[in-house]
Length: 165
Image 1: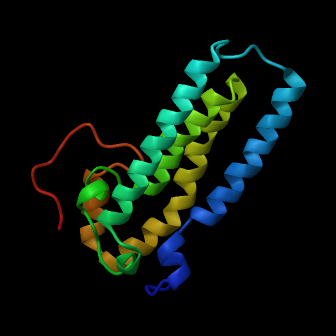
Image 2 (image 1 turned 45 degrees about the horizontal axis):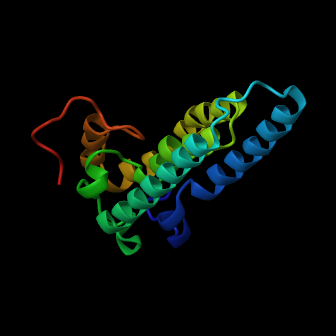
């Protein structure tokens, strides 16, 4: 694997492939939902709408924080361990996987969509491995230590006082 990623891979990483897989699985979940017609999560539309609105706003906040923490021009050139990257290694992916997708699943009001949101996690964990191998080839031991102390999509429960810079 080259230690010089393309500008496209620096900016987007696994995002385009992951998005295609996520949407394809969402379409399959939608088809299954119509075929199976499961019991809805809730009959209260206000609650469902509120959860979706909150998840969308939190996702937008996380995206803005991520971009401010590591501008596009620095991706693949600088190891950022501050801002959003202090808590998770992939804050943009985490925003969609852990916040938006579950908000959307609740809004769509079906257990099948909750299952869809859960299934996406192991898929995305597999997708980002190549990105992380590339980061190790570029940043070496600093990235390995960062992996050890920082969660991929969820913050680690333990906090270390020393963080790689």
